[in-house]
Image 1 (tube, helix red, strand yellow):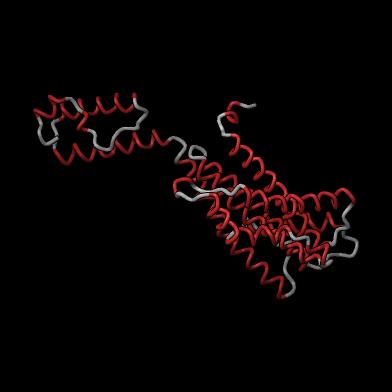
Image 2: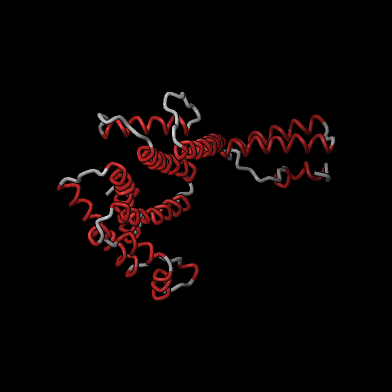
Length: 295
């Protein structure tokens, strides 16, 4: 077993592996079901087996979540209360995602109920980011890219449904050209070679344009925030130097003492990687504090 996996308790490790399986199955359905609705793809034998295998996994997930519920020990909740809480909250979502509606009612649109499982996937990602303190910002960016690509796929399926393609267009061409239009609209590029025609297409295009502005701003803001946090110790060190500059100017400290304090701060800061206390002077030499009681 890998070293970083051996440090994780077995029950937590098994839970994370199971959550990864649920995420993979949900992602497959989130890609396949919208495509199947707009293109009416004839599933092969292997695809059908995989689809019903996922349904079985979702049914097993209900029993696993009920028999082995997750709860916070700090909240002093016992297993019985955790099971009751699951039945009052996530059980309905898991049940709707596990019911094989296509077997009961052969209507492709009913497959969207299985996409409710993505609410659980969002919960898994939220908890994972909270626990991964060191890599939380990178996980946020990675999860955002995951949801952005999936959202672009859903928008592509919507444009396939609204747009009228030439009769000789195959499904691959329809998807690639629609995805191209969605990406150029989301990124606010908009070359204009594909234009809306009907009122529904115009409304759909405007929604994607407004969404693209928000997506663009979110990406720029998070990337800038991520880059600014690459070296928090260095940032803290320079913040401390700025506070020191304000302090010595406000107190009119003599030049000689300013140099001694500056040398001390630089040496102490480099030795401690910049993670100094916000109050510098309680740790300065005692004779300095005796000579200059205002420090």
